Image 1 (cartoon, rainbow, N blue to C red):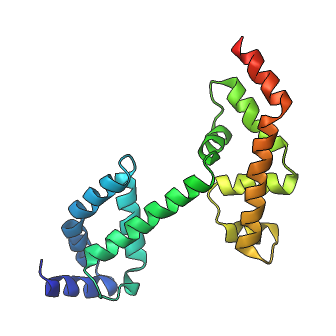
Image 2: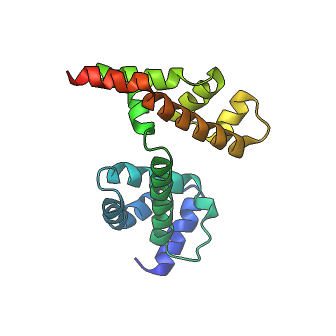
Image 3: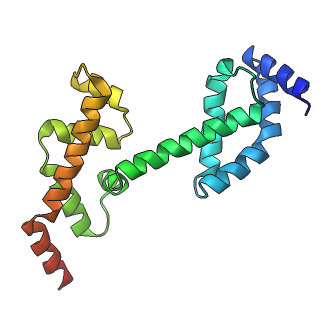
Length: 182
């Protein structure tokens, strides 16, 4: 596809022409899927779908300063980086989230997670639960009535995670682990 053809399709897509967006999708999907597989093997299909959904919602912001595929690639990489930051910041979040959704077969894991959550003050417990449900810091702040949104919630989440870790490292945790090994 030539640059002029791409510009015409983008302009039509901005005007709401879904067929034009579908043509852009068909032209760019193989390259984007290949990039997604390199960046995040297991979630590549989901990431590509999410990228196109985000692109469709914000196509009016595409300024045409680069190729459409380049813009899609930036959306994709920004999402991958966001996921990596969240995972790095809270490596135990996935385990806790899974535990809240459905108890595991390992009863001791379930007990540890619940004990860690129980160690939190009620407000912090609500904040951590909402964070695990995927709410943004701004959404949590609104729900809890905080006026200083992101930084206050981020600090509370960080402290809550540390409190949970400390609760799980307490002597009661060590003795229960020892009893599980026998």
